Length: 286
Image 1 (tube, rainbow, N blue to C red):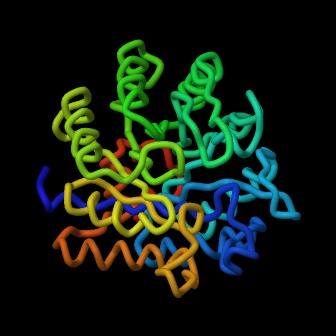
Image 2: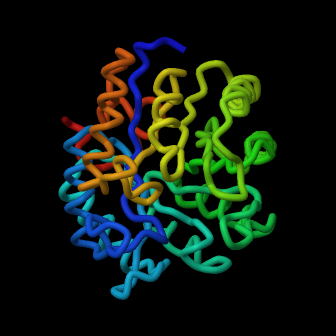
């Protein structure tokens, strides 16, 4: 893959776990999330990966909160790709996909189960099939969250069966305790597996958790993939410093791209790479 390939930066702004006690910059309310995303968008992020929270900071899957967030993001970050989380910490069963009818550009899709730090991340086959069907019905592009090698192969199986419309966009998640650790040989094998199954030019992304975020950003940018950063995955700049904002973590990826002589994707380029240009009504003339 050519190094002239622009790098899409995804910012995971909130997640389900980090709180103000972990880092005061974690955006919890919808208005905080919009403001934090806008700053990250200006810094170079072209995808926002979004969770919503209750006022007491606990996770929520309330479609009304997602709707308010989507409206604000469309207004203040026109053209940015909006990706909702259907992750298992936010709700149980079909509640995890209740916001898909809002037709965000994308949504995360975990296609298999694995261990998390203190629990099993439960993605039973019938729920995976239902979430995929909802995404197809509402023209939402899935981002496959690959916590393990089998998840990449499962995504290929679903694609072949017509459960996923376009070439799957796979994100390698490494560094979750009790799941796949940060391992360079595994990372390289993941890339080869995606290219073998989906084609040499299939776009992919990588996310590193905690202190490994910068490592995975570096690996992904250098290898021609796309990068995820943000306070959901990591609240620190380094051992001694909290990240002052989501934008600060985005700027760190921009610096890595500069060192690797890779351009940072604009939202227009990101939509073209992910074949999303038809999904957004706003900002198309820009």
